[in-house]
Amino acid sequence: MRVRIDLDNYDLYRELGAGGWKNEGKINVNPADLKDLTPSINNEYFFYDQGKRIRLTLDGTGQVFDYMPASKKLTRIDRTIHSGFNFGAQKFIREGIVYSFGGTGFWSFSQALTYYDEKTAEWQILRPRDPGPSSIVNGYQGYSAKSDIFYSGGSEFYRFLENLDIEYSDEFYAFNFKTHEWVLLGDINKTLPYQKLREIIWTGAYFIHFANDKLFIINPESNQVYEYHDANQMLQGGYMNYSKGDTVYTFWHINDGPVVTFSVKEILAKSNYIGPFYSNNHSKWYFIGGITVFILGLGTWGLIKKIRSPKRTLFFNPAEVKLLKALMSQNPLSPLSTNEINDILELSDKSLENQRRIRMNIINQINQKIALFFELDKAIERIASEEDKRLILHKLNPEVSKYIKEYL
Image 1: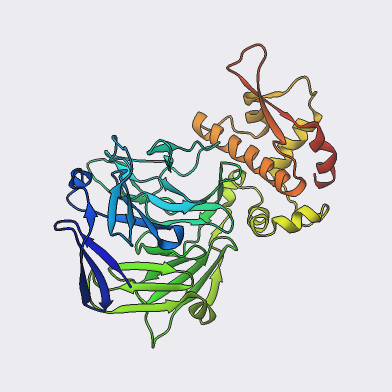
Image 2 (image 1 turned 90 degrees about the vertical axis):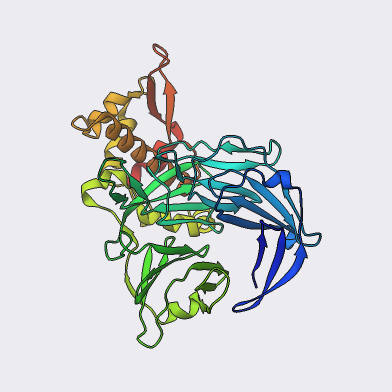
């Protein structure tokens, strides 16, 4: 059952069925709270206090409202002044806090990771440790509360040239809230029509990708794609799509018309596995280290903590092995410089930005694997040079060497 508020006259409507709405009277709102509304509104909503309070955010504006269903009171609670940079941002709730990732506005695409701060009544920045996707707009975007991971891939972007063509990212990332790190997991399966048909919703565990007469069910945590195709029942996205738990709701009109529902579990039982969601591109192997380890680590953290030596699980790719061996052979009093690491990884023929990106991804992958496997944080440490504080040096945590020798 849906509820909507007509902000032109402050009327509250409750849906009785397909095409039927009941006027339940006026809401209680201060007109001054609505003076900065945009001509058209897209909003997201989040339930608090077991549904006794509903938090609404207005797309691109930074405005935040709380609605109390019992008293029908709508109140603006934020103090946002600067806005307009994050239309189409991905909003989700984590541990009672509303987050907003990415978006677009002012002729640019945002990488900003922000959250609404109750104390200041403003949006604050969340600073990741490393670069992530260049754009977070549409495509495969979703937060998994189970793994505490935000997934991002297949985003779109423009270069704002005379020929304004939309481009799409092939990369799929994961942002780990525990470490504040972006990890490039790989390239998205080309079988998926994410560059043409982009009606995708996130259920909290699966991406549901509507593609005309086909339907793809994608599990990013297990890295699996299933295809549902039934000649007798074609499931298509509608004007508005929602999910709640295992159920997907498709509305064919904003206010009336038919409503289609289906169970993700049931259609999965009738679907065929077609391959991994993302995979390592061999031309970019240095970007990605141990994809399987990362994904398995998300779901089996407790198991890994108990089992200390499952050799078949810990894997370092060639670039990681090369760097680890160099660090292990280095005098602890002479950490490796950035240029030395570039030489070890054979990055000298690449641009400075690519050198930095590849280098950081490899170091972050190594640190994450060792943290997951041995519970040792910051295996590769970054320190400032004593001679020139602007220069960053890298050394291996002494505790790490004795654990990883046998895996190299």
